[in-house]
Length: 429
Image (cartoon, rainbow, N blue to C red; front, side, top):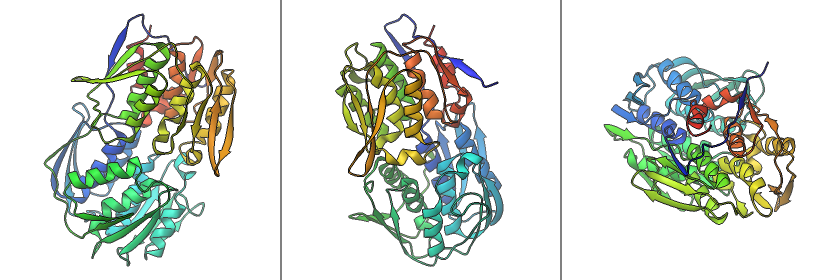
Protein backbone atom coordinates (compact mmCIF):
# COMPACT_ATOMS: atom_id res chain seq x y z
CA UNK A 1 0.00 0.00 0.00
CA UNK A 2 1.31 3.43 -0.95
CA UNK A 3 2.27 5.78 1.85
CA UNK A 4 0.17 8.94 2.15
CA UNK A 5 0.78 12.21 3.95
CA UNK A 6 -2.38 14.19 4.80
CA UNK A 7 -1.55 17.89 4.59
CA UNK A 8 -2.95 19.98 7.44
CA UNK A 9 -3.94 23.62 7.49
CA UNK A 10 -1.66 26.31 8.88
CA UNK A 11 -1.93 27.10 12.58
CA UNK A 12 -4.10 30.07 13.49
CA UNK A 13 -1.17 32.42 13.88
CA UNK A 14 -0.29 35.57 11.91
CA UNK A 15 3.17 34.43 10.89
CA UNK A 16 5.89 31.81 11.03
CA UNK A 17 9.66 31.45 10.76
CA UNK A 18 11.20 28.34 9.20
CA UNK A 19 14.65 27.00 8.42
CA UNK A 20 15.46 25.20 5.18
CA UNK A 21 18.54 23.10 4.34
CA UNK A 22 21.52 24.18 2.24
CA UNK A 23 21.20 24.64 -1.49
CA UNK A 24 21.51 21.49 -3.59
CA UNK A 25 22.92 23.45 -6.52
CA UNK A 26 25.59 25.12 -4.41
CA UNK A 27 26.35 22.00 -2.36
CA UNK A 28 27.05 19.79 -5.37
CA UNK A 29 29.13 22.46 -7.12
CA UNK A 30 31.13 23.00 -3.95
CA UNK A 31 31.74 19.25 -3.60
CA UNK A 32 33.09 19.04 -7.13
CA UNK A 33 35.22 22.17 -6.92
CA UNK A 34 36.70 21.17 -3.57
CA UNK A 35 37.52 17.70 -4.94
CA UNK A 36 39.26 19.22 -7.96
CA UNK A 37 41.21 21.69 -5.82
CA UNK A 38 44.51 20.90 -4.11
CA UNK A 39 44.31 20.95 -0.34
CA UNK A 40 41.75 20.86 2.43
CA UNK A 41 38.42 22.66 2.24
CA UNK A 42 35.75 22.73 4.96
CA UNK A 43 32.24 23.13 3.55
CA UNK A 44 29.67 24.51 5.99
CA UNK A 45 25.88 24.46 5.63
CA UNK A 46 26.01 21.35 3.44
CA UNK A 47 22.72 19.89 2.25
CA UNK A 48 22.38 16.26 3.32
CA UNK A 49 19.85 14.53 1.08
CA UNK A 50 19.66 11.57 -1.30
CA UNK A 51 21.32 13.61 -4.04
CA UNK A 52 24.20 14.99 -2.00
CA UNK A 53 24.81 11.66 -0.29
CA UNK A 54 25.02 10.05 -3.73
CA UNK A 55 27.65 12.62 -4.70
CA UNK A 56 29.57 12.02 -1.45
CA UNK A 57 29.43 8.24 -1.91
CA UNK A 58 30.81 8.64 -5.43
CA UNK A 59 33.69 10.79 -4.19
CA UNK A 60 34.44 8.17 -1.53
CA UNK A 61 34.51 5.39 -4.13
CA UNK A 62 36.84 7.54 -6.21
CA UNK A 63 39.28 7.63 -3.30
CA UNK A 64 38.90 11.19 -2.03
CA UNK A 65 39.61 11.85 1.64
CA UNK A 66 36.38 13.03 3.28
CA UNK A 67 35.29 13.88 6.81
CA UNK A 68 31.48 13.95 6.85
CA UNK A 69 29.63 15.52 9.80
CA UNK A 70 25.89 15.46 9.13
CA UNK A 71 24.96 16.75 12.58
CA UNK A 72 26.84 20.01 12.02
CA UNK A 73 26.13 20.05 8.26
CA UNK A 74 29.83 20.04 7.45
CA UNK A 75 32.07 18.17 5.01
CA UNK A 76 35.85 18.41 4.86
CA UNK A 77 37.37 17.41 1.53
CA UNK A 78 41.04 16.99 0.70
CA UNK A 79 41.29 17.80 -3.00
CA UNK A 80 43.81 16.08 -5.28
CA UNK A 81 44.56 18.99 -7.62
CA UNK A 82 42.67 17.63 -10.60
CA UNK A 83 43.69 14.00 -10.16
CA UNK A 84 41.34 11.15 -9.27
CA UNK A 85 42.88 9.05 -6.45
CA UNK A 86 41.27 5.82 -7.73
CA UNK A 87 41.71 5.88 -11.50
CA UNK A 88 39.69 2.69 -11.82
CA UNK A 89 36.41 2.68 -9.91
CA UNK A 90 32.68 1.97 -9.97
CA UNK A 91 30.24 4.64 -8.83
CA UNK A 92 26.46 4.94 -8.58
CA UNK A 93 24.98 8.43 -9.00
CA UNK A 94 21.52 7.11 -8.02
CA UNK A 95 18.92 9.76 -9.01
CA UNK A 96 21.23 12.77 -8.68
CA UNK A 97 21.22 14.62 -11.99
CA UNK A 98 23.96 17.03 -10.95
CA UNK A 99 26.25 14.21 -9.79
CA UNK A 100 25.51 12.34 -13.04
CA UNK A 101 26.49 15.23 -15.31
CA UNK A 102 29.28 16.74 -13.18
CA UNK A 103 31.10 13.48 -12.47
CA UNK A 104 30.83 12.23 -16.06
CA UNK A 105 32.72 15.32 -17.22
CA UNK A 106 35.15 15.32 -14.31
CA UNK A 107 36.18 11.68 -14.87
CA UNK A 108 36.39 12.10 -18.63
CA UNK A 109 38.65 15.14 -18.30
CA UNK A 110 40.84 13.64 -15.56
CA UNK A 111 41.25 10.23 -17.22
CA UNK A 112 40.95 6.64 -16.01
CA UNK A 113 38.56 3.72 -16.34
CA UNK A 114 35.19 3.99 -14.63
CA UNK A 115 31.81 2.26 -14.49
CA UNK A 116 28.88 4.59 -13.83
CA UNK A 117 25.54 3.19 -12.64
CA UNK A 118 22.32 5.00 -11.68
CA UNK A 119 18.76 4.54 -10.46
CA UNK A 120 16.00 3.48 -12.84
CA UNK A 121 14.69 7.07 -12.76
CA UNK A 122 18.06 8.53 -13.79
CA UNK A 123 18.34 6.00 -16.63
CA UNK A 124 15.37 7.75 -18.26
CA UNK A 125 16.95 11.21 -18.17
CA UNK A 126 18.92 12.58 -21.13
CA UNK A 127 22.69 12.06 -21.26
CA UNK A 128 23.17 11.60 -25.02
CA UNK A 129 24.26 15.19 -25.83
CA UNK A 130 26.96 15.06 -23.16
CA UNK A 131 28.08 11.56 -24.14
CA UNK A 132 28.34 12.62 -27.79
CA UNK A 133 30.31 15.74 -26.83
CA UNK A 134 32.82 13.69 -24.85
CA UNK A 135 33.12 11.00 -27.51
CA UNK A 136 33.90 13.67 -30.08
CA UNK A 137 36.62 14.90 -27.70
CA UNK A 138 38.30 11.48 -27.68
CA UNK A 139 36.69 9.80 -24.67
CA UNK A 140 35.65 6.16 -25.03
CA UNK A 141 32.13 5.75 -23.58
CA UNK A 142 30.20 2.49 -23.91
CA UNK A 143 26.51 2.57 -22.99
CA UNK A 144 25.55 -0.78 -21.46
CA UNK A 145 21.76 -0.58 -21.86
CA UNK A 146 19.97 2.13 -23.87
CA UNK A 147 22.26 4.26 -26.04
CA UNK A 148 22.76 7.73 -24.61
CA UNK A 149 21.70 6.73 -21.10
CA UNK A 150 23.05 5.24 -17.89
CA UNK A 151 24.73 2.87 -17.16
CA UNK A 152 27.96 3.26 -19.11
CA UNK A 153 31.71 2.75 -18.98
CA UNK A 154 34.26 5.50 -19.44
CA UNK A 155 37.82 4.89 -20.61
CA UNK A 156 39.78 8.09 -20.96
CA UNK A 157 43.26 9.53 -21.05
CA UNK A 158 41.80 13.03 -21.01
CA UNK A 159 40.18 14.91 -23.86
CA UNK A 160 42.14 15.64 -27.05
CA UNK A 161 40.60 19.03 -27.86
CA UNK A 162 40.75 22.46 -26.27
CA UNK A 163 37.48 23.85 -27.56
CA UNK A 164 33.98 22.56 -26.83
CA UNK A 165 30.48 23.79 -27.65
CA UNK A 166 27.53 23.11 -25.34
CA UNK A 167 23.87 23.84 -26.10
CA UNK A 168 22.34 25.26 -22.91
CA UNK A 169 18.88 24.56 -24.33
CA UNK A 170 19.33 20.87 -23.48
CA UNK A 171 20.89 21.16 -20.01
CA UNK A 172 22.79 23.93 -18.30
CA UNK A 173 24.33 21.21 -16.08
CA UNK A 174 26.43 20.05 -19.05
CA UNK A 175 27.85 23.56 -19.40
CA UNK A 176 28.43 23.97 -15.66
CA UNK A 177 30.31 20.67 -15.54
CA UNK A 178 32.72 21.79 -18.28
CA UNK A 179 33.16 25.19 -16.64
CA UNK A 180 34.16 23.59 -13.33
CA UNK A 181 36.51 20.95 -14.76
CA UNK A 182 37.98 22.86 -17.68
CA UNK A 183 41.07 23.97 -15.78
CA UNK A 184 42.29 20.36 -15.33
CA UNK A 185 42.55 19.90 -19.12
CA UNK A 186 46.08 20.29 -20.50
CA UNK A 187 46.12 23.66 -22.22
CA UNK A 188 42.73 24.58 -20.78
CA UNK A 189 39.37 24.73 -22.55
CA UNK A 190 37.44 27.29 -24.54
CA UNK A 191 33.75 26.62 -23.88
CA UNK A 192 31.30 28.08 -26.39
CA UNK A 193 27.74 28.31 -25.10
CA UNK A 194 24.74 28.27 -27.42
CA UNK A 195 20.99 28.27 -26.85
CA UNK A 196 18.72 30.54 -24.86
CA UNK A 197 20.22 29.95 -21.42
CA UNK A 198 23.80 31.13 -21.92
CA UNK A 199 23.21 33.69 -19.13
CA UNK A 200 20.84 31.42 -17.21
CA UNK A 201 20.65 31.35 -13.42
CA UNK A 202 22.49 28.04 -13.00
CA UNK A 203 25.28 29.19 -15.30
CA UNK A 204 25.54 32.33 -13.16
CA UNK A 205 25.80 30.26 -9.96
CA UNK A 206 28.66 28.30 -11.52
CA UNK A 207 30.39 31.47 -12.67
CA UNK A 208 30.14 33.02 -9.19
CA UNK A 209 31.54 29.88 -7.62
CA UNK A 210 34.45 29.73 -10.07
CA UNK A 211 35.38 33.18 -8.81
CA UNK A 212 34.93 32.16 -5.17
CA UNK A 213 37.22 29.15 -5.67
CA UNK A 214 39.84 31.22 -7.47
CA UNK A 215 39.51 29.56 -10.88
CA UNK A 216 41.10 31.67 -13.61
CA UNK A 217 38.88 32.28 -16.65
CA UNK A 218 38.05 34.92 -19.21
CA UNK A 219 34.61 35.55 -20.65
CA UNK A 220 34.34 36.59 -24.29
CA UNK A 221 30.70 37.02 -25.26
CA UNK A 222 29.11 33.57 -24.96
CA UNK A 223 32.46 31.83 -24.50
CA UNK A 224 34.41 30.97 -21.36
CA UNK A 225 38.19 30.63 -21.62
CA UNK A 226 39.17 28.28 -18.79
CA UNK A 227 42.88 28.32 -18.14
CA UNK A 228 44.88 25.29 -17.02
CA UNK A 229 45.96 25.44 -13.39
CA UNK A 230 45.20 24.48 -9.82
CA UNK A 231 42.16 25.76 -7.99
CA UNK A 232 42.97 28.10 -5.10
CA UNK A 233 40.85 26.24 -2.59
CA UNK A 234 39.27 28.32 0.20
CA UNK A 235 39.89 26.87 3.66
CA UNK A 236 36.20 27.39 4.52
CA UNK A 237 33.20 27.80 2.24
CA UNK A 238 29.67 28.56 3.51
CA UNK A 239 26.77 27.19 1.45
CA UNK A 240 23.63 29.29 1.04
CA UNK A 241 20.21 28.02 2.21
CA UNK A 242 18.17 26.40 -0.56
CA UNK A 243 15.99 29.09 -2.12
CA UNK A 244 14.08 26.43 -4.08
CA UNK A 245 12.99 24.96 -0.74
CA UNK A 246 12.19 28.39 0.66
CA UNK A 247 9.76 29.05 -2.19
CA UNK A 248 7.29 26.42 -0.95
CA UNK A 249 6.90 28.24 2.36
CA UNK A 250 6.63 31.64 0.67
CA UNK A 251 3.90 30.08 -1.51
CA UNK A 252 2.06 28.98 1.66
CA UNK A 253 2.19 32.58 2.83
CA UNK A 254 0.72 33.67 -0.50
CA UNK A 255 -2.31 31.36 -0.52
CA UNK A 256 -3.06 31.74 3.20
CA UNK A 257 -2.62 35.52 3.51
CA UNK A 258 0.01 34.99 6.23
CA UNK A 259 3.59 36.12 6.76
CA UNK A 260 6.34 33.48 6.54
CA UNK A 261 10.05 34.21 6.96
CA UNK A 262 12.76 31.81 5.81
CA UNK A 263 15.88 32.20 7.92
CA UNK A 264 19.32 33.09 6.50
CA UNK A 265 18.06 33.72 2.94
CA UNK A 266 19.25 37.02 1.46
CA UNK A 267 18.25 39.10 -1.54
CA UNK A 268 21.99 39.09 -2.38
CA UNK A 269 22.05 35.29 -2.82
CA UNK A 270 23.13 33.80 -6.14
CA UNK A 271 20.30 31.32 -6.71
CA UNK A 272 17.97 31.93 -9.63
CA UNK A 273 14.82 30.91 -7.76
CA UNK A 274 14.97 34.26 -5.94
CA UNK A 275 13.13 35.44 -9.08
CA UNK A 276 10.06 33.67 -7.70
CA UNK A 277 9.75 36.50 -5.18
CA UNK A 278 9.04 38.87 -8.08
CA UNK A 279 6.29 36.49 -9.25
CA UNK A 280 4.68 36.63 -5.81
CA UNK A 281 4.92 40.44 -5.80
CA UNK A 282 3.18 40.56 -9.19
CA UNK A 283 0.42 38.40 -7.73
CA UNK A 284 -0.13 40.93 -4.93
CA UNK A 285 2.09 39.69 -2.09
CA UNK A 286 4.44 41.82 -0.02
CA UNK A 287 8.11 40.79 0.12
CA UNK A 288 10.87 41.98 2.42
CA UNK A 289 14.20 41.21 4.05
CA UNK A 290 15.21 41.42 7.69
CA UNK A 291 18.44 40.50 9.50
CA UNK A 292 16.89 37.06 10.07
CA UNK A 293 15.98 36.29 6.45
CA UNK A 294 13.49 36.96 3.66
CA UNK A 295 9.74 37.05 4.26
CA UNK A 296 6.58 37.00 2.16
CA UNK A 297 3.22 38.30 3.34
CA UNK A 298 0.29 36.92 1.38
CA UNK A 299 -3.04 38.36 0.36
CA UNK A 300 -6.60 37.12 -0.09
CA UNK A 301 -6.68 38.97 -3.43
CA UNK A 302 -4.05 37.08 -5.44
CA UNK A 303 -3.93 38.04 -9.12
CA UNK A 304 -3.47 35.68 -12.04
CA UNK A 305 -0.36 36.50 -14.08
CA UNK A 306 1.53 35.46 -17.20
CA UNK A 307 5.23 34.75 -16.61
CA UNK A 308 8.17 33.23 -18.51
CA UNK A 309 9.68 30.72 -16.08
CA UNK A 310 12.34 29.12 -18.26
CA UNK A 311 15.17 30.39 -16.08
CA UNK A 312 13.66 29.34 -12.74
CA UNK A 313 11.52 26.44 -13.87
CA UNK A 314 11.85 24.42 -10.66
CA UNK A 315 9.13 26.73 -9.34
CA UNK A 316 6.69 25.88 -12.15
CA UNK A 317 4.95 23.38 -9.87
CA UNK A 318 4.84 25.91 -7.03
CA UNK A 319 3.11 28.52 -9.17
CA UNK A 320 0.76 25.83 -10.47
CA UNK A 321 -0.25 25.13 -6.86
CA UNK A 322 -0.92 28.83 -6.20
CA UNK A 323 -2.76 29.53 -9.47
CA UNK A 324 -6.18 28.04 -8.53
CA UNK A 325 -6.48 30.63 -5.73
CA UNK A 326 -5.82 33.64 -7.97
CA UNK A 327 -8.40 35.98 -9.46
CA UNK A 328 -7.97 35.31 -13.16
CA UNK A 329 -6.03 32.96 -15.40
CA UNK A 330 -2.34 32.17 -14.75
CA UNK A 331 0.05 31.33 -17.59
CA UNK A 332 3.38 29.60 -16.95
CA UNK A 333 5.36 30.04 -20.15
CA UNK A 334 8.44 28.64 -21.89
CA UNK A 335 8.87 25.40 -19.90
CA UNK A 336 9.21 22.69 -22.56
CA UNK A 337 12.43 21.40 -20.99
CA UNK A 338 10.76 20.30 -17.74
CA UNK A 339 9.32 17.28 -19.54
CA UNK A 340 12.81 15.71 -19.29
CA UNK A 341 13.41 16.21 -15.59
CA UNK A 342 12.62 13.87 -12.67
CA UNK A 343 9.37 13.11 -14.47
CA UNK A 344 7.37 14.70 -17.28
CA UNK A 345 6.51 17.66 -15.10
CA UNK A 346 4.10 19.27 -17.57
CA UNK A 347 1.91 16.17 -17.71
CA UNK A 348 2.22 15.70 -13.95
CA UNK A 349 0.98 19.23 -13.28
CA UNK A 350 -2.02 18.85 -15.61
CA UNK A 351 -2.82 15.44 -14.13
CA UNK A 352 -2.82 16.62 -10.51
CA UNK A 353 -4.71 19.84 -11.19
CA UNK A 354 -7.43 17.77 -12.88
CA UNK A 355 -7.64 15.48 -9.82
CA UNK A 356 -8.24 18.60 -7.71
CA UNK A 357 -10.98 19.78 -10.07
CA UNK A 358 -8.94 22.58 -11.67
CA UNK A 359 -9.02 23.22 -15.42
CA UNK A 360 -5.67 23.64 -17.14
CA UNK A 361 -4.21 23.18 -20.59
CA UNK A 362 -0.94 23.15 -22.50
CA UNK A 363 -0.44 25.65 -25.32
CA UNK A 364 2.33 26.37 -27.82
CA UNK A 365 4.05 29.72 -28.05
CA UNK A 366 6.87 30.13 -30.59
CA UNK A 367 7.51 26.36 -30.52
CA UNK A 368 7.76 26.42 -26.71
CA UNK A 369 5.24 24.79 -24.39
CA UNK A 370 3.36 26.68 -21.71
CA UNK A 371 0.57 25.92 -19.23
CA UNK A 372 -2.63 27.91 -18.72
CA UNK A 373 -4.41 27.41 -15.36
CA UNK A 374 -7.90 28.61 -14.47
CA UNK A 375 -8.92 29.51 -10.92
CA UNK A 376 -11.44 27.23 -9.25
CA UNK A 377 -12.67 25.41 -6.19
CA UNK A 378 -10.29 22.74 -4.92
CA UNK A 379 -11.72 19.30 -4.23
CA UNK A 380 -10.00 16.63 -2.08
CA UNK A 381 -7.39 14.64 -3.99
CA UNK A 382 -4.49 12.26 -3.68
CA UNK A 383 -1.52 13.94 -5.35
CA UNK A 384 0.52 11.59 -7.55
CA UNK A 385 4.16 12.58 -7.12
CA UNK A 386 5.72 10.35 -9.82
CA UNK A 387 8.73 10.05 -7.46
CA UNK A 388 9.37 13.76 -8.01
CA UNK A 389 10.30 15.68 -4.86
CA UNK A 390 9.24 19.04 -6.26
CA UNK A 391 5.73 17.86 -7.10
CA UNK A 392 5.30 16.57 -3.55
CA UNK A 393 6.51 19.79 -1.92
CA UNK A 394 4.68 22.14 -4.28
CA UNK A 395 1.26 20.51 -4.15
CA UNK A 396 1.47 20.27 -0.36
CA UNK A 397 1.04 24.06 -0.50
CA UNK A 398 -2.59 23.54 -1.56
CA UNK A 399 -3.33 21.40 1.49
CA UNK A 400 -2.27 24.14 3.89
CA UNK A 401 -5.43 25.99 2.84
CA UNK A 402 -7.83 23.27 1.63
CA UNK A 403 -8.95 20.08 3.37
CA UNK A 404 -8.35 16.64 1.93
CA UNK A 405 -5.03 16.91 0.10
CA UNK A 406 -2.95 13.74 0.44
CA UNK A 407 0.59 13.40 -0.92
CA UNK A 408 1.43 9.95 -2.32
CA UNK A 409 4.97 8.75 -1.54
CA UNK A 410 6.03 11.77 0.52
CA UNK A 411 9.44 10.17 1.14
CA UNK A 412 10.50 11.22 -2.37
CA UNK A 413 11.31 14.61 -0.79
CA UNK A 414 14.47 13.01 0.60
CA UNK A 415 16.08 13.80 -2.75
CA UNK A 416 16.67 17.39 -1.61
CA UNK A 417 14.74 18.14 1.62
CA UNK A 418 14.31 15.03 3.72
CA UNK A 419 12.65 16.76 6.69
CA UNK A 420 10.29 18.88 4.59
CA UNK A 421 7.16 17.42 6.15
CA UNK A 422 8.64 17.75 9.66
CA UNK A 423 9.12 21.46 9.03
CA UNK A 424 5.61 21.64 7.60
CA UNK A 425 4.20 19.87 10.68
CA UNK A 426 5.78 22.56 12.86
CA UNK A 427 3.52 25.26 11.37
CA UNK A 428 0.31 23.25 10.75
CA UNK A 429 -2.40 22.02 13.09
